[in-house]
Image (cartoon, rainbow, N blue to C red; front, side, top):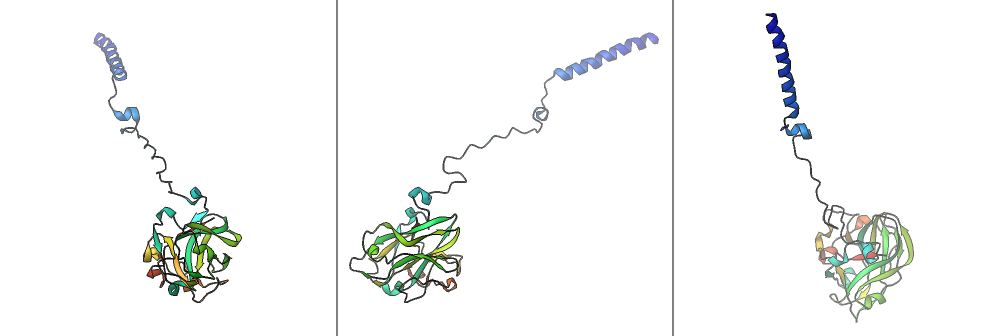
Length: 240
């Protein structure tokens, strides 16, 4: 009996060593052992094509030496017009939001067509802030509205520093002209331009009647769309 016990112990030890050796040298087919997750390694998404990624904003005013605009002028493929009876003496307002501080010197207007026989006087552009205070205005721009139907800068009498925020570009026309001859460039959005908005935050509106100059203050809560909705909307403006 003692002899059998002595032989069995070395045999058991040899078998145990064989099992250990086999486990160390056999290939591991469990993907979790190698990668730890059992799933293929994540592959990074290829970069988006240049200029079309999430941060792409399309054309910017700075691309055309401007500081801000109501929209890309390339989209202003329509014209807007109104009769002298419709907008003469009314202050037309177009809202614009500045994202950074600028020195505001000019208002660019897209003059689409002119009436060589028009009789214009007391025509102005200007800028109101969100409180309805006139920040700056141009001299009479009647001569500039009679020549060269192009996008043109109309200089403010005194440039001013405009902090980020909401402003309203003002246009005042007076005189007589042929309705479909004196026209401005626009996007053609029409009555949808004020979707979701109410006074005093309308994007396009008119105020007052019988004005020969831009008043020092206006009540933005009185913004009206009655004239805007008859085809006097979507005018394009730029700032420099």
